[in-house]
Amino acid sequence: MTVLFATHSAYLDHLAGPRHPERPERLNAVLEGATRAGLADALIPLDPLPATKAELQRIHPEHYLQRIETICLTGGGRLDPDTYASPGSWNAALLAAGAGLTAVRALRDGRADAAFCAVRPPGHHATPNESMGFCFVNNVAVVAAALADEGERVLVFDFDAHHGNGTQDAFYGDPRVLFVSLHQWPLYPGTGWLTETGEGTARGHTLNIPLPPGATGDVYLRAFDTIAAPVIERFDPTWVVISAGFDAHRADPITELGLAAGDYGPLARRVLATVPRGRRIVMLEGGYDLDALMFGSATVLREMAGLEGEAFEETTSGGPGNGALARVREHWDIEGLL
Image (cartoon, rainbow, N blue to C red):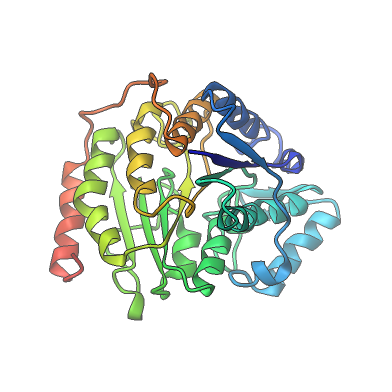
């Protein structure tokens, strides 16, 4: 299978400040991962176009976007306690949000079977009205909203260690999008408890699976097979957009989960298989250990291309989490959602 690989040198111009974990070297690690994956014949470079204001406004109101743009154009500054903008951040954010939209157009033109968007800054913490967690524009939400407006049923699957609160907020009442998140609990931003399941006609369209520190790859697969898969099958998505954070790796400096790079392979394989080829997009979110980011992204790229080979790291098992899965399933059973 062929994979579009969307990235841009402007992503390196977003500078979050000295010693900040969301640093330009992260992008270099993903690029090295693409090389390590051995996909020279399968990867197709894709130059992302910047998202337009109209495309961004499907998620973010004008006053929110204007504030970020003004801060960047006037030399940069702090948007919130942990999100800093530099002069190059606005252009990077437009191109990050535009990568998924560019990928959709290219996939619809039949140029490849899937797309991997290696972008910065990340996006899944950005709510419609608030920047947070290193995120400016919610890149995944922008592309999911565009697809939904075109009549698609969109699965957003988030396996970043931190809950994608911004994506959840954007679609909490929207039955056109199914949001599924596996994340560490407790952990920043403090959202994503199992009782958060959507509202109104979208009740049952948000599935949060909070996992304890130390959870390993076998727990992730059990969560998908026993809880997520039936919900996804019922929703019957026509597109999948993956928020691919690699900070659930056991080496990550700001989380406490227990995955290895090898665990991302079988998980990605399951998620990608929920929709046909040509309707699969993966967008980079977090991941702050450079080696873990390199090998984790390489593993996912291999899965996207259908390439078999020796894993960069073995899969993990034996960690805690079965009790957490039982609680999620019990709640969904009681609420009549499974």
